[in-house]
Amino acid sequence: MMSSNTEPNGSGRFQNVILMHTSQGSLVFYILISIIILRYAYISLRYHYSHFSRKPKQIPPTFPYLLPLLGSAIPFTFNCVNFVKRVTQYAGSLVPVRLSILLGEIFLFQGPENVAAVWKQQQLGSPIFVYTFALKNIFGMPQHALAPYKADNSGSHRRPHPDSNVASHNRVDFLTHMDLFKAFGGSGLNTSFERTANILKRNLTGLDVPSDGWVEMPDFYGFFQDQLGAAVIEGLYGSTLPRLSPSFIQDLWSFDRATPKFAKLMPRFLIPEAYQARERLLDSIRSWYRHAREHFDESAIGPDGDADPYWGSQMIRSRQKVLLEIDNQDDDAIAAADLGLIWVSITNLVPSSMMCTLHIFRDTSLRDRIRSSLDGVFDEATWDIDMDKVLRKPLLSSVYAETLRLHVQAYITRCSPHRDVGIASWWLPKNRVCMVNTYASHMDTSFWNTRNGAFPVESFWAERFLIDPHDPFSGPVRHNVPASQYKRPAPPGTDDEENKPYFSVQGLEGAWIPYGGGYAACPGRHFAKRIIFYTTSLLLAAFEVQILTKDLDMDSSSFGLGTQKPKQRVRFRIRRRVGKLGA
Ligand code: HEM
Image (cartoon, rainbow, N blue to C red; front, side, top):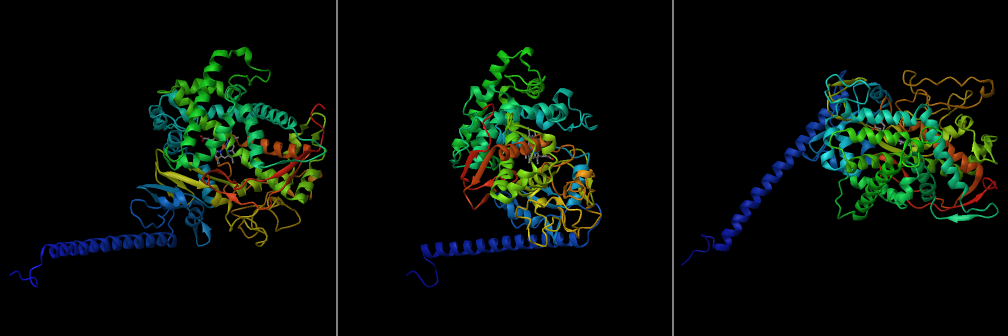
């Protein structure tokens, strides 16, 4: 007889084996958890210790993370707003920090002194990894074309880095920057701006909006996308592109909405429409090339010496030559690079212009004050605006600066490809990604003036950037920030302006950073500033707008890539204040 008490039967043995394995499994599980917790405690201790016993030229400490391989990847990607706020603060100040992300590292440099030092460090340029990641995953550049971008460690300065031996025709970073500097600096700025402004004027004067009654519209941002977005595309890239592809602008805005998803590597089956929109955009750009190559000759260049109806501008004519001479490039490759440029020229400019105008029209007292300050700058007969005067208006300038402070949420990226470098009192190892986040800097409660909390950094305060000579508590910076960090700039000094509140961003180089900074700062910044001032003053002078949606809930889904906009559509009504152009 089988002794069931002493010898387990088949299923009993099986249960024992399971139990044994389960207890072994639990043991392994507990050991793993203990290792993870001990590791976390060790990283946390090192983190606090290195802040506690700061040494000069120290590498920023690693922010504690629990999961070994992932590091801080999940909160960095999916909870970015709160995460960035949390990791860049230590004991009430902004500090640099090292983040461990999927076996790699990112160094976030914050704090006015550190950020200003990032701008000044000559060894820092655009990180090749970030650039090629965007070209491939966001703008759809084919794999075969990426090699010269990856190999270009010569920097964006005229003189190549001495440790680089990239052939001169493959210096993509430097060559493309030269074209951008010419197009958006010096006399190039005037022609780019004049063209775009005239197209916007044409678009706005052609609106079917009467002066004796309101027209209600459902979406203020949509209005800017249609009017200003279209004007910028036509102004910079000519009339052929939108004429050949009438859905180009709509596709561009659909693509814009999906860029955070492309950046998170979402596959096609999750966002098929975004992939289709991107393909249509790339197709349109290639058709544009074919048409322009067939029809353009030098005689098509207009009287400003820059514009032509096919390529649009000297920038694009030169870019065609420069990009196609680089190894491995073809129309598929350069269409992706051009999609990047076209996207970057509208993605921040249009929402920033819209938010600036929205803040003004939402507050009727602010609207009236800015309107009266703009007296005499608008010519009703020609709809011309005296830009030299407009750009010097203190209150409008303050509203512009405050709009960008509050809403631009971008990562600015740098890398030192050849050697370790010092950044203020810190040290950055070579070939690592260094980032500065505009949001962390713009929300720095230890730096920005809030009038003792009356105007928190998260709120819009039209006068934040105005300095009143008679009020020591006015101006953008808290009055207790030490003079070594911020010195109040002198007033402009003309008799006319003496004793009046004035605007200045002098001394804010490491704090007000919507356009990045240093040599690699946004090349379109002067163009963008002019367009924002122009659009705002033209709408104020020629139209009356009433914002009907009262509550604004802001959308940060493009955090890291650009500018916030309202989550919901903003309803408004509009009517003309002056006659149509030429009427
Ligand atoms: C309010 C509007 C704009 C904002 C807030 C903005 C912001 C920025 C920022 C933060 C950067 C990174 C700068 C850095 O690395 O230091 C950048 C780069 C760039 N921006 Fe803008 N931008 C605006 C408008 C424009 C416009 C109108 C253009 C015109 C084409 C433009 C073209 C570019 C280009 C080409 C780059 C990349 C430069 C590079 O490769 O290093 N931006 N922009």
